[in-house]
Length: 175
Image 1 (cartoon, rainbow, N blue to C red):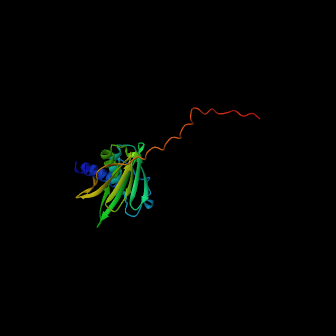
Image 2: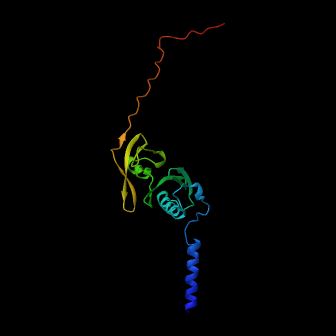
């Protein structure tokens, strides 16, 4: 009986070591092209976070953007995440556009983010703009609105050309 129990435990450990117990397979990802800080455990964590944020259960396609930033694409949507490591402890910074989507009442695809400094990002879209500050928590990061959402001023429409006076009638010319 103990031999049977031991064999089941051995098979279970073998599956865990081989990586067969996971939900997703990232064997197709070339980590040598994905930046200096990524490894299979961090990538699996990113994949899990992005699947939740993007509400996508399909396989996600990663794209390395440089400076520990990654774009995850799937289900006709995408998200940008940054890996921040301090003294060997790493955490994923979520896409600021997910928060701005709520605050600005605008679709994520219509929003553009610009990094202002290490912890501040500006977001523009749908004729509005706002700044967000990155807050560190014990187990992760989150974005908080750091300014009022401002409605961009729309330029005045260009004046239409003045119509010709009604009393002038064009004279036809013949050659």
